[in-house]
Amino acid sequence: MACHLAGRFVRAMHPMSDSSRSAVIDGVKALACTAIVWHHLAFYGPMSDVVNAAAPGFIDWLVHYARMAVQVFLVIGGYLAAASLAPRGNARGQQPWTRIGARFDRLVIPYAAALVVVIAVNALVRPWLDDPAVSADPDLFQLVAHALLLHGVLGQESLSAGVWYVAIDFQLFALATLLLAMVHWLSLHARGRMGWRWHGPVTLAQLLTMALVALSLFGFNRDSAWDVWAVYFFGAYGMGMLAHWGVHAASPGRAAGWAGLIAAFTLLALLLDWRDRVLLAGATALFLIAALRTSAAARCLDWAPLRRLGRISYSVFLVHFGVCLLVNAAVATWWPQSLPAAAAGMVLAYGLSLLAGRVLYEAVERRTHTWRTSLRWQAGLVGAGLATALLS
Image 1 (cartoon, rainbow, N blue to C red):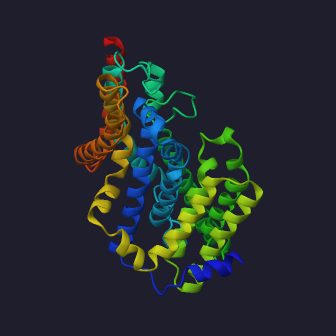
Image 2 (cartoon, rainbow, N blue to C red):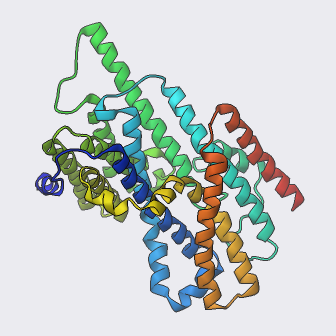
């Protein structure tokens, strides 16, 4: 039944052009980024408390549902990982550690720059904003853990909202890279030593990806004790990888088969243990297959502001919390009980977050990333954190 419904869902002839695919990916990232920023605006700071008194339904929705947009990022992350690591299902096993190192550098450099900003903003607003959103001065161990993307697994309090995702994104990419490198090595080894080749409707890389998706959805993702490890999130990430293979399938029938597999995974996982996040992840993966094999979605999402926001969404995600803290502090100091000021402040914080994200993107993220640059930013993060603590 899932395959039949998915087949009707994916009525398409051929995948669209790279430009149109980029429009869809950027548009979806932009919408997810906006949801995350507004979730944090609703969850943290006194402005949302004032607005909540007048519009509790709106704030409650942002608090409880907008946060799930992170599932969209997980699915897109998996989609892009498959494009890089196993296009059309054929695992690329060359230089896995170099790929993992490059991913670390790409994530850590703008992340470290944004955390320096957040640490400075915390120190600035701490004397005049008494709110749980304001963090205490970080210690050396906390700073080093963040610099190495180990803050989650080491149980360290996050220096900024949402930075747990950066560590998980890195873990997921590393896991997928090593899995596919192992598949590549096994294939070469078996072919060279025994003359054995894998034959089947899917590649060995695709089969093992499906197995790990099943382990995550039906096992690890049902136990929150695993939520600092990649296996907890691989269900969503892996469905993004399946979506990539569906988008690039040679025929509508094969595309429908991948869509049906995603639908089946989603339905079985929900029947076993209902999780809204799994529903959203499965729906996002199915949407990508349908949208990236037709032109209608590309036309809807091919809007210049959305495309620009999609490109800078990672930088906006990293830096927005510091901006929101600063605006919260200003509004709480000068207009603490004013509903118009609080509402305007939330809108202003969103706009300034986009501006700050653009600055971070242009100044840091889009530049060439090397391990030496990464080390400098990591050292800068630790040094800035310690200096702020000493000066406070």
